[in-house]
Amino acid sequence: MGSQLFEQICALPEYYPTRTEAAILASCADDLVAHLPHQVDLVELGSGSATKTRLVLEALLRRHEQLRFIPVDISRSILEESSRALVEDYDQLEIYAVAGEYHDGLDFLKQQGGPPRLILWLGSNVGNFQRDDATHFLQRLHTTMRPDDRFLIGIDLRKDAAILESAYDDAAGVTAAFNKNLLTRINRELGADFDLNSFSHEARWNRDAGRVEMHLVSQIAQSVHIAEIDLTVEFEASESIHTENSYKYSAHEIETLAASSHFRMECQWFDEERRFSVNLWQPQ
Image (cartoon, rainbow, N blue to C red; front, side):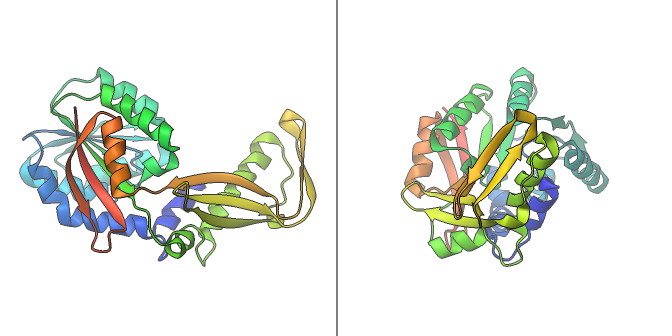
């Protein structure tokens, strides 16, 4: 359910990151491939439906007759569906899929030999990490890489609050449903009695922290019992559950993130409005 809702979010008119990153990749894919060693394996962390990945795949296949693709995703069903679709559309493609969390993918990469790799981490998924945690994760990724490997990371940029808040609180209410799905899962898996209708979704831009915050705000004073852990939580009216953050970066913060994670910026691409960035990093 959550994965399906997120796919819907990516298609919303307010949610600019997906289409903006795709437009950048469409325009820079051949330039990107020109920066790579002649033969590479393609790896993607959090591959999802792999829609944007196709732009890189096609650019690589224009240069090579064969390509090995290693998608890593926590959702086995989406991984299987997207892998089947890819092999049907590209007969030159060999896929070795890894169903698991990021650390499973990193453990797999560390054990592998073969040609140099281009590792993708798209969708500004780095924004789901607190800034220190993002650095630590990228440092760990660095330990799996060899000097000829490259890392392509999509990073959303700081911008006007109105643009950011509407991107995470769309008019159709899909993001609200995605956020409330957390309560649905707690009800189902932990025996809680959250009334979803008594909570509203809210997105807030925290300029100082550089992040969009997702909240579920209690509309009334209420008690919620979570049977599995025998916990009762009292909510006041307007009290919120802070469910998620999405961090945004300035150009300087991207450079700092790369350097602190032991990478060097090799190339960087933006859309015309400079809402989003795609960055090619080389391990140092």
